Length: 358
Image (cartoon, rainbow, N blue to C red; front, top):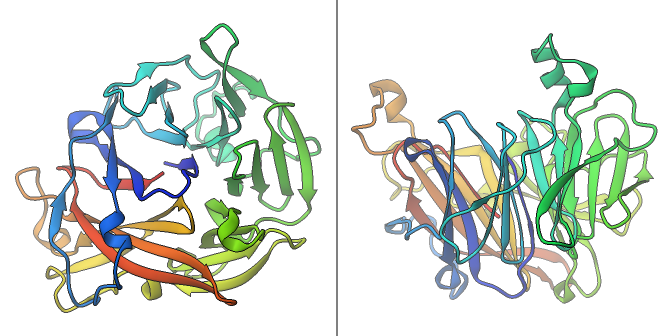
């Protein structure tokens, strides 16, 4: 499951998606985080009240419990593409999403990224794994890049995008990001370098034989808060504890260079504060980062009550997962810093084990 976004400038409102298999929907919530950005950081030993999510602003209906959505947002537009090949499109403010065109090829593992005005790029994350899992698949059915765009007369359509020139085989995607304007999507391929995709020209360009040093989806921060610098934030790739390491990468360097790393324990609530509910542990591999503009980041992390593993879990019991959202400011004074503010905690809907910020 993957998500991507085009930053909303100087905002305290985060979009949070929650996968709710029990009600066969993925739910979009708008959360005003001003209260956790204001004031001094809270003491990690002070666990905040567990909140309930407000009414969802959009429901993306699922066909079955196993259907999974890749999601991206651009301005007020939110688009999803599913493992069944369906496309759902909505504007924030509409409570239900409308059906878009079916994808040309279904993908079990895909990511979406905004690629310009009313354009979204679908990327196959692990194409060879999909090919190997289906011995009856033909080469014409291999997972591929697709571009969703709005046609001049109004409807949406998917268009096939060839692989970058010179790419050998079907390598995994190790990292990607959309630039601040959403006009280009940068994609790193395992052992084969990094390319940028210009959606307006439908053209790939090789940026270098190197790969981005960050794993999965990353966030580019390039607004005035950094004085003209371009920094990429995300999870550090290629280390044993990459799920536990947040890093900033200088995108003006070639190849892009890591300039600072942080342990998530430095930024997010510590693993076992005294006042946390008994038995809760972090799930580092379910941590997501979103940029709200104006130097504001929010970090979402699922925590889990480890006792349910031993005692068993059923739909009659409360969901053992909680979602924490930590407010962070990016500062250059002159050293790059992440200033931690407060955090909120939300009770996950019944049977839901996935949530992330856009």
